[in-house]
Amino acid sequence: MRFEKILNPIRTPKTPVVESPMMAFILALIAGCLNGYTYHKIKAFSTLQSGNFILLGDSAATGDWEQFRRIIWVGIAFGLGSMTTAFIAYLEEERRKTWAFVILSFEVLLLTILGTGILDGYLTITHICLIISFIAGMQGNAFHKVDGMTYGNVAITPVLQEAFNFLMLTLVGRLHALIKSLIFFYVIAGFALGGFIGTIATAHFNEKMLFFPALVLLLVLVYLLYAKDNEGEPIDSHYS
Image (tube, rainbow, N blue to C red; front, side, top):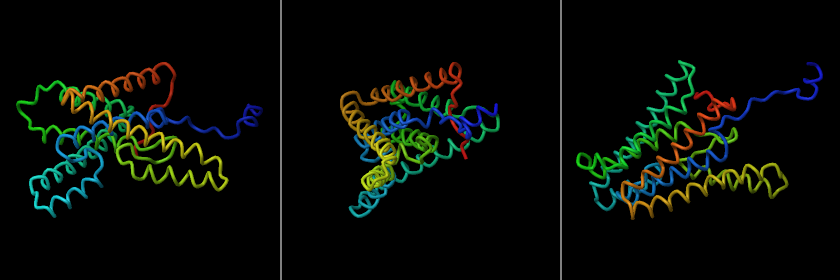
């Protein structure tokens, strides 16, 4: 035991699977897809609320009050999604359960239902985009760490800031910062790729495009279940 302590004096917990760079890339890809869909359909972002507030000001300045109201509701839907994640995480932590499974399952279910088009006769395209913004709010509030660093998979501005911040630190000689910079650029690439895929797929397949992010998230969910049951990996950390 003493020899083991000498070799490994500090035991650090493993990084939860949902905080891995690959997971951050995938979640950013999903967020980009959702933005590609909603912006193509209603000229509002499902995740980029800073962009929506610029569009809000633009709508007010041009007197487009219908778009103004639409963007207000998009922001509210995003906020409600964030609140839902907080509530689910609270309940699951009380039960000492892994809350990531519930969040991802909820996302997959909603995206699959929307992708089938069975609600098209009951919902307008604006309603569908509001549900997507709700999903984005859930995801953004659930997963906001990569390798222990705070980031945003639905809000890319601070990620871009950190990418160049660590790049500058690398250039002045702190070479350990290079990996951090590359991780943040990796997330940005996922977001941009998702936006490209989401826009192209929406133009060709409309709501059926939503099957793509649903399938990706389902594969992520299956992988997390495997990691938990077979590899004993920690899945998520405490929410608060």
